[in-house]
Image (cartoon, rainbow, N blue to C red; front, side, top):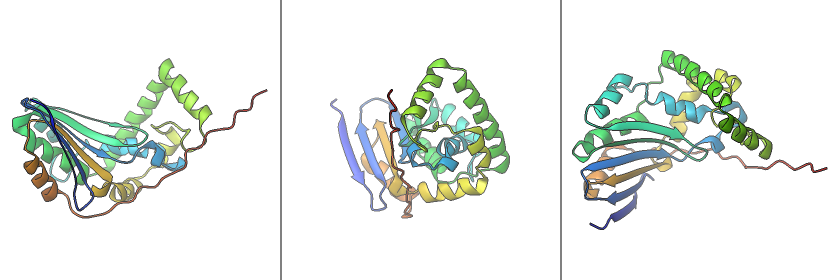
Length: 226
């Protein structure tokens, strides 16, 4: 069966991408058009931090339940933060498509941002920073990035202990509310599903709130050749 591709932008700005395949599995991702290039120097690492926190519970699911609902049905759940986007994705048998959609949409709409989880996750990321510094390849690439570009783009995507220490729950919540809106999101699905059903769920689960993403100019440092 030749893949069939669909694209639609909803009235609220949410972009839907769907490739139909005749295999009993679905890959699904919610991507937010915001990453490291959209952070000020004082907020460096906040996009990655929010990514971590979205797995720590919502208004109707604990962190354990988020993982269990996907994994006990044969699925896999993960996410990543890049310079230009933050994404949350899963792969699951297609018969559990609606469940996976509900879990992922719940994560990107209703995170709790529990104060205790924020404290715990800061420590996790501090250890991650140390791990990167102990990895020669990662550390060298990070230093090349720092020498090539001016701040804030020259700073590590993961942030620093100083910037992460200054990030409060209030700052996280304000950024989330400003950015995690349909017009800043892409829903990408590949697998055995019905596009009309995807459209119905997307329109049912997302409102019309509009968000704005701050942009910073990416500037290279001047080379001081002798």
